[in-house]
Amino acid sequence: MIPASFDYQAPSTLADALRLLDQNREGAKVLSGGQSLLPLLKLRLGQVEMLVDIGKVPGLDYIREEGGTLRIGGRTREVELERSELLRSRYPALSDTASVIADPLVRNLATIGGNLAHGDPANDHPATMMALGARVVATGPKGQREIAIDEFFRGLFSTALEPSEILTEIRIPAPPPRSGGAYVKLERKVGDFATAAAAVQLTLGAGGAVERAGIALTNAGPTPVRAREAEKYLVGKKLDEKTLAEAARLAASAARPSADRRGSVEYKREMARVLAARALEKAARRAEGR
Amino acid sequence: MAQHQIRVTVNGSPHEARVESRLLLVHLLREVLRLTGTHIGCDTTHCGACTVLLDGEPVKSCTVLAVQADGREVTTVEGLEKDGKLHPVQEGFWQMHGLQCGYCTPGMMMTSYALLQRNRNPTEEQIREAISGNLCRCTGYVNIVKSVQYAAEKLR
Image (cartoon, rainbow over all chains, first blue to last red; front, side, top):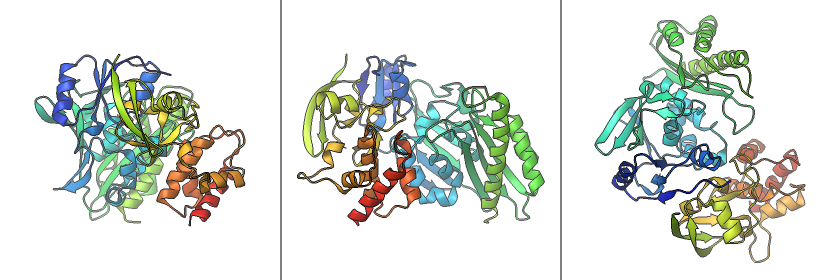
């Protein structure tokens, strides 16, 4: 399959990339890892006049923690997230997520910025970012702006990014002590989108009661779904079996999946509950240092 | 129709080509450079038959533009054998019957080669995880795992 014709530019600075996007607002698209965009162009589900490849723009590829914030460059590849010791020890929900995206070959090219900017509710990072309370940095011709992840996803394949903006950084608040997170995904086979998946991030107080809970679901509606009712229910409670089960039930009640080859609405909602329960249990174990 | 002059090193040899923006890397390899060892399977980023190494890392060449490989190094299955001698990975697939129809084999070997570059002593689980983006419909993967283990032992 061959995509329809387009122009291709690979600028070597961010300023040049932004200029190209600004000059071609209607027809230009950012090419990051290309693992969602190129299949879409090949299947002719989408068409572009110009691809602005940011692969040669320096300084968009990093994972570092500074001043109480984890900063990840928008062009950081999934394989780097997957292998990061910092993420494994401090942000396990993010490690979990990176290691179940598509397959290992795709993860050698796919990027975290692309995964978010594509605006596909079936992608895995969005739910984890919601659970972690992330903010994304959009850089445009007039400079940078920060967008809360809850404001970022507008609809199917639609985000708050302007056509002339590039997602350059993801910012995640560093977890306080007694925090833990997890991402658990059900897929028919490696490389498939989630039948259902849940992201959880918990912080416990000194007495063991929940101080903050972030819970979100993948592929459970036209945009990634944040399970606010379940989050609210958990705050102030100790994590026993009954509480976790009720939180999972509430989380699944936020799911609005549609039926497809992966299953019926009823099946997917039940799987959302099961996976939320598993992610809650794993996150609780990690928060308690077990 | 945008055209680009690109320089790509393939299996150690420099190549120059004039390509359209939309030309995929797999087509550059097969149709322009006539290296037909790299197969096209599903053409939708699933099967891994088209796996090549880009700067040493295995990627699906049906989902990379040829122009993205400009200035970079590509290794295909033709680059595994040296001076008429099979690479241990190739020898492993031969000795352990790691193929039946052979369609997935070039991609399977490139992924296995890259794994063994990083990890000379992979567990069975690590081998299965590494090749999880390469589909084989013949072998049930059992002999593929044995082939990679054979190569790993040979390389240690």
